[in-house]
Length: 234
Image (cartoon, rainbow, N blue to C red; front, side, top):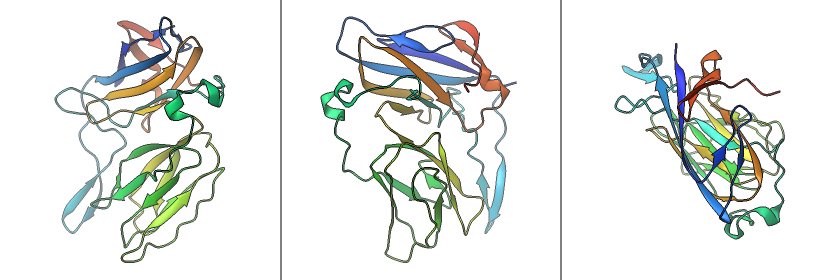
């Protein structure tokens, strides 16, 4: 059985189960999280063989040295915590005009999981692919990217959860995009480390977690050295 261990470093005092956090003594806080696998690392799962090269599933990517889990999402739950624009850090109140870039390398979306703010436009730039964003509240579509061209997918509204992105030409290709209404979303790197900066202090905050491979094992967590059960929210 694969269990998760979450270690929190930083200025948050986190209550058990609810993931509510109250921050004191400063105006803004930075949160660091490390997520590691408690158990044996599953062997890689090939999903496709292309010209003799195996395409490996990215549904659970674990660093062999640290057992850190990549692509694990930790974010403020906007359903339970309503943040007004004036409560955000001054540097984060205006949505960045920078267009997040979703690359395609060796028939895989890079990054595999990405987070953006509602109002930003995702840019995909790789000919020979046909990306399809399965949005609920934003326009999707799956146009073919022509040679020398690029695809821009504009967002206007926050999505209720991670949105799957696929290639209509290469069915083994998939990734996820989180379209959030706030900037407080962290996605773990290759060693399982997450950092969320400039969180407003003095507020009670509810967080939620998500992982592509979240079967029952994600409910059994060692948190701050204590074993807990994190139930799926409704």
